Image (tube, rainbow, N blue to C red; front, side):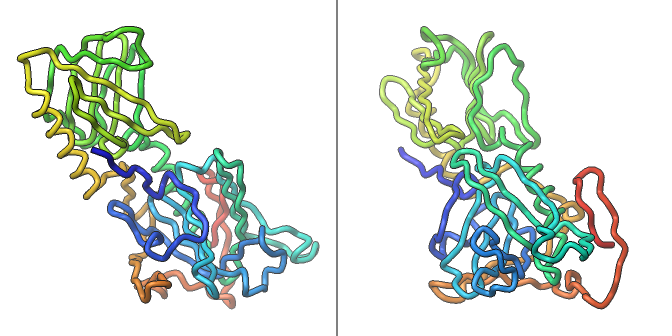
Length: 319
């Protein structure tokens, strides 16, 4: 059995089809704003050809041009190495103009060594900085729900909302990680396959399993953050449990995890300031993001408000 593990949080994609911009199962749109400029493409902030909209989900950042939605970028959080927020280049607005709000966003990706720089125009929403920081922090701290881990001499622990469903003792484990087959205990939880012994722990989420093969033993292939893969081989002690039965149980859990994945990223409404967005497929070539509660986020150019600084996020916001 082979499974697709290319979820949008693990990919950096350019000019993808409209269907790939739609939310995948388990993905939630947290915030969307217009009047965003891709300033690596232009230095003229008023150039409508490079203005677009940005959406932050619990898995990625999506940017698409207003006049050509087929020109877009999907940046998965797993690809992001650093997030920076700052002020616009003073030369672009004049040295005498005071800038009271961070409006520049820089996303630096680790694998491709690529950097993306976006400018939020004055009439654009500024709350996206808060939402992006919160969403990325939640994603970064919940990696055990999505990524396979191998650990030595560390006690096992259950994740939030995780529980053990099946337990099998005297299961031999083989891999490039060990010099010879090692006996241990195999657990099936509602989120992961877990194998442990006195020296080594294997923790593999169902959504990270690329393939599973039944021969004389069960071989599981998982993905790695750098794009590589690792094989884990489990051999059950004869007469303790039917290998075909265990194989079927793992396959069933993988299928369920694909249909209704849990990525571990849960944001409370007060944290994410979720704006009740939903994706609507207008045509086969266009994806439009609708905002139900628009008035809450409209920026009033005529009203002057105070500026407050958030120490935790390192970002200044308008009251």
